[in-house]
Length: 294
Image 1 (cartoon, rainbow, N blue to C red):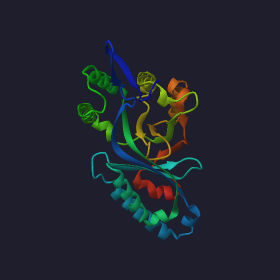
Image 2 (cartoon, rainbow, N blue to C red; image 1 turned 120 degrees about the vertical axis):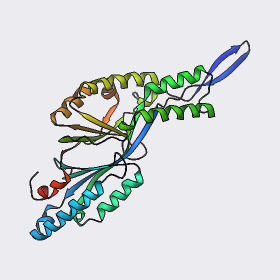
Image 3 (cartoon, rainbow, N blue to C red; image 1 turned 180 degrees about the vertical axis):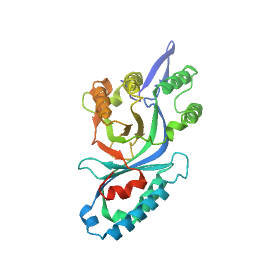
Image 4 (cartoon, one colour; image 1 turned 135 degrees about the vertical axis):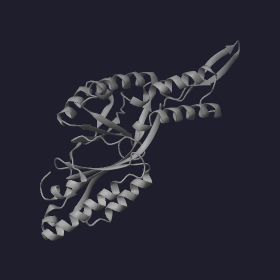
């Protein structure tokens, strides 16, 4: 059956059979920057209850602290702030760091700022920037099988790690991306649907590769209008992937996602979580935001 771990029986000679393990159903992935989204609700009533001098002091300290926190320790480190629309929150922080431990340090540093006494964390999402290697996986697995290398043997593992290392070097800029300097962001988590009849994880590698290729072709048509960061969160948060879309016009989010709903991957298997949309808020303009302007 598609996607299982059963072994195939190959006839070698009369009266002799050889057990040949199937290739793994799991495509190779590359992991890069650790990613944390934080969505906060501002306690405006408490904030307005302060004197103007207190608001100015706390706001200035917050800007200085956030700027220091946003200074990169590694290439690709970033902390970016967005003013959110709707009831799901008021501010969204998007953090990229080189490890989950560094993200935890960011959380602790934010908690020490007086400004955060006025913020209530309503939602967060932890993930790791991920690139799926369906095409490379299929080619690598087929080449190793043709050489008679069985899955998960030392020779197999060595070759797989060499492939991953080459790909990671070639795609370093995508694994540790700069957050696009666009006006709008749209973040949402998603799963690949699992049900009694339709189960993404029971499809063959070849079928999943084909569907993902077709899915990606839609996104490429929007490449001049939308930038994206895909992150994996299986085992890290409640959904399987996180998607960040960046654009100058928020309507393009609607157009792209709507068109993708007709694609086989999304139409049959896509399951989407809540959508969070924000307007980029440069850190130095946080004081303006606190005063009611962008």
